[in-house]
Length: 405
Image (cartoon, rainbow, N blue to C red):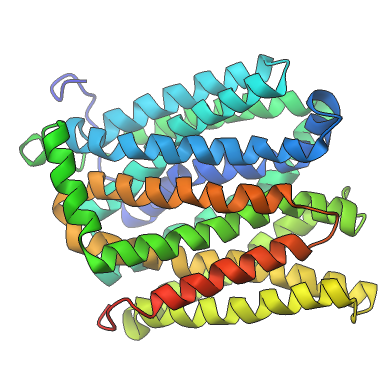
């Protein structure tokens, strides 16, 4: 991993840089969304008695990602950005191969958790790379541009997964992860130079980490941003883990789910485009607050419509689809801005900060999302109520962040 032995890479132009960072971000989305069409087959093959447990294939990956996030940033602050991404992708590929050959749900869940640990490398270190080169609202704008491309992955991943299942069976999806990881690593190795020179690297020791942790969590803006980000991630993961069962059980549209999900993802891309256009003028705090308040009202409406059935079946399905679009739009209008808010005061320890912020928000988000997903009762009611409560809490905490942000 020595700097002298590392291959020389160029620095891509802005368009290619955005595309490359979006690809690294997309490691997470692709690894989650391509699995969604496989959930019924996983339930039938590995957990037929308790089919809801198949959703844990999603949340175990997210949990592993949260755990890996604790280490990816500090390691990248010590050894550089590129080596940590390379190691994470190698772990990701190996775990995908283990999941491919697994014959029990328990082994698959462990492999998926390890795969998530590996995926944390490219996801978190990509944020640190962006912070190495940008800051503040300019960083938020660039992340929004990344999210515009990133959102295309959820749009096509379920259809891609369904296509693989049709021709090669659901296990072949793990081979697609292997291919994705290899190609992304090759692109990074050839085109992206190291953004953290040796003289800016931080020694890897517990004392330094404690100092950084105290600085991060002792900052009111960062702590509140992490809390809000946790609740938003929890809402997003709860929705993702239940969206396929809802389309299947609630609406009888399992066959057309990949197309609907793709349409939902594409429609929600406008939120990231909008955020990129207005964030420098309007400000991150205002955009987040308005978005959260709107989502509270929409989630309450879906919960009420489910519980009291005051909408005709066709209109209720249309309302659910629009609500699903709004949840992905929530991510596009909040997560990049919250990350920029949290990272703004700690550019000097960007890798460690990205790890702490990402790890806390992701691990705690799983604690929010998993019970909501397992509470699925054949209707959207549990997830609608769960999202309403989580987003309402996020809105209340957001109002405590300084208005200057």
